[in-house]
Length: 154
Image (cartoon, rainbow, N blue to C red; front, side, top):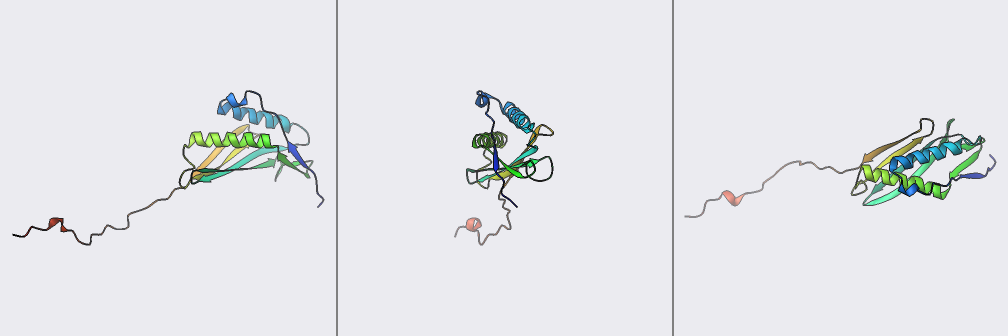
């Protein structure tokens, strides 16, 4: 298979983006992806971000772009598509803030993981979050001896 150039998807964020609420930021991201998806060469349908973290650390997110047809997003069916670093950072920040707001401290101890799905067809953003935790159970309660009941010597 021949090598095809990787195209980079870039769009500037509004100047006031950092001051928007989470819902407003989400709507801006969906709108910008849809607007750029109207280009006839881009058949982008879903952006999916998978994240994980534990031990008091956010381990980052990995984003995958899916086209309206099966498989990853392509340009003219053969070219690859990647996100510009600014767009990628905006998505990761959005995801990190959302998870932290909904599940404070999720990254502590055993941590958690999940998936954010931006569906451009449905115009929706969903978050599926999973917590990791360690449980313990009392298997038995044993006393070797107990001198507290002993009577003093007369």
